[in-house]
Length: 511
Ligand SMILES: Cc1cc2nc3c(=O)[nH]c(=O)nc-3n(C[C@H](O)[C@H](O)[C@H](O)COP(=O)(O)OP(=O)(O)OC[C@H]3O[C@@H](n4cnc5c(N)ncnc54)[C@H](O)[C@@H]3O)c2cc1C
Image 1 (cartoon, rainbow, N blue to C red):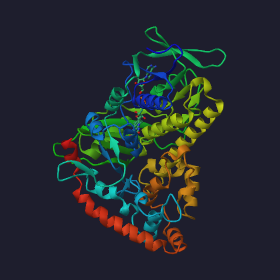
Image 2 (cartoon, protein in one colour):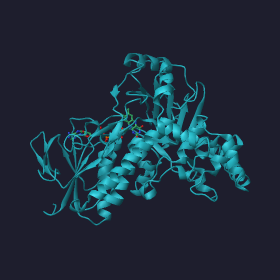
Image 3 (cartoon, rainbow, N blue to C red):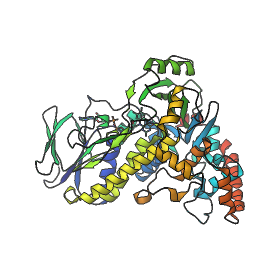
Image 4 (cartoon, helix red, strand yellow):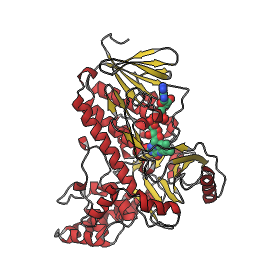
């Protein structure tokens, strides 16, 4: 039983965002020794979005933070490993590149600058692919897991890097719900709110079964509905839809065939009017065509995919995407996470990653007794979320700077969809190499799209300048020799290590 004076945090929504919010908020309250009730209100009448199955390494760091067993997580959520993205035919037809998510700079001796990019810059100067010194490049190529087996049969990681996961989205919510001990769960649909006439803050939520759920702080995780933050608190949506390349998503599943190897990567395959994702879990591959209906009807999108895959598909949905973010993700005593706060497109898995980082920033720097939260805290937090999502937007936009001009869609993208920020950055990087100082770190230095993630994409798309890289290396005496020695040693080590890693499917079956 709660004490009468105990504060109550009410989270509406039981999707991935809602359960992440419940876990991280409850954990932070405990760490602060602040006794409060955490309640999740979810509606069994409203399904979760049903897509969103790829993460970044931050997800694994979070599992570790909570002390969850990774192998248990893999078993219970049908998950598989994600070591990077296979970008297929983005630069031009027939050209593919990987975006591995490990950063070899973490294991080499620092140069004068840090965080560093000197292995990447050396690779560009030497005309090598920047991914050559990445362990995950070899694991990706050989469809390996990031684990090998020891003589005693137990697993040992092949390298020191965090990997990511692909999973069944519906099972992840359930997994976190099971792990969130002490969180109260109510099954009800929120249909309105009682608000304080002076402050405008929410005092209680009204539900379809006649309940009134009182609380002190409210978290909107209601997905695209934005039931609290927009409908009750009036937060404005900033749409990026104008000149965004795509606006629809058609997800479908294909069962894995008996004995079929499981790629440890998200497939991102540039198509006639958008791109198709492929996300393998243990039993199936979750696919989806993200496309522009300005250039393709849903029927034509389906036909194109069936022709590409060589078999019929059964679309599970055809989702209209309202790409953008809230102007303010936190208004009064209500904050939004997940799809209710922002959504771009699945490329680079920014959504769940963004939710986790927002929750980390919120719980580390702003979560307090609701009566003590200041306007300044809200303003600082809102500016951080806006910048984070805008920078995701710019990073995603960079992927569309390609040589492709083979369909009306790609010609339209080249002419109308490359953002001014993208053009400015690319112009800058014709005069200097991308580096740490080109990116403003997030509060707490939480993971963000910085130079490490940009290099494989820029290199894969052929957007880096070899002369600028050579000038950089030549201006720093001794750096080329140091970088060559480190890169050659890592390349040799990782080439030798990869064959010892367990095949991805073999690993998953042994779970
Ligand atoms: C096509 C597509 C592909 C994607 N791919 C990726 C990806 O690869 N990687 C990635 O990181 N993200 C991806 N995402 C985003 C990802 O799906 C979401 O970030 C994640 O699933 C979190 O969703 P959510 O919890 O915010 O919303 P939802 O899953 O929609 O959950 C909303 C919850 O709110 C409840 N609810 C709604 N209204 C009410 C109400 N009035 N009262 C009570 N309960 C209510 C529902 O019952 C549900 O429990 C993708 C999204 C789309 C659309």
